Length: 271
Image (cartoon, rainbow, N blue to C red; front, side, top):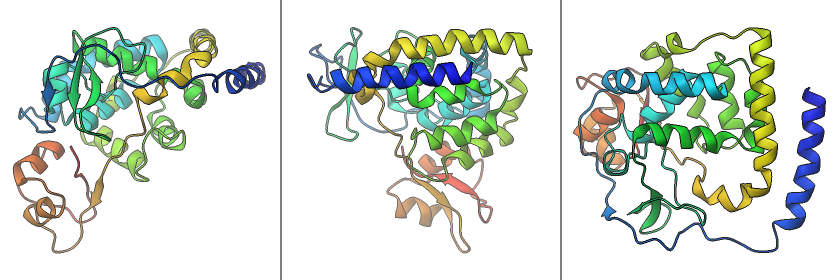
């Protein structure tokens, strides 16, 4: 199974490398954006409330594609600031997926890598979670779908290995969230037969998607996530000033109930 799949990937990659030079498709669409938003955190939803609200969606995605629900929830917590980001609130966009040439839905503008970057607007959070799963169905993440669907450690490390995020501590931050909120309890084992059936289905879809990967790549650049390790004498105030955040924003991003900090803890310090 694995050898045959790798062979198909190699053949498909040759086709892509030969054809991808024909034209460079823009990451923006010609559709008029709904509005322009900033990077502020506009709610104060706790991580626990976020998990309770979206756990059913994450489990459904896991059962369909094999992505551990714990991983999807941890990524949602990180990338949407517990659902408090303006992008999540205004656009139902929990994973920061941008527009591309083929996106036919509504759009919204927010400063990111460039001023007024174009982001996708979803009708519901469920659509955002589904699009995130669909995004992961590409060649560089293919090896992850051969893991057990409850192997969140393998997925956390594999996402970094595949280039999903640029920060070297991204896997540790995911696993820290999974442990803190006991997210692994939403993961499910699968039988050998179920795994083979699920792998065959998803890997076939990945192979079919390869010709379109180049034009969709701009839709989700690597997550540039600032993560800070708490050092001796650090305070929330000093850390917030260092990274241009307010203390309240730092508490929302990391679901902190008070100002107490643990030496060596990893804090998310970017919105």
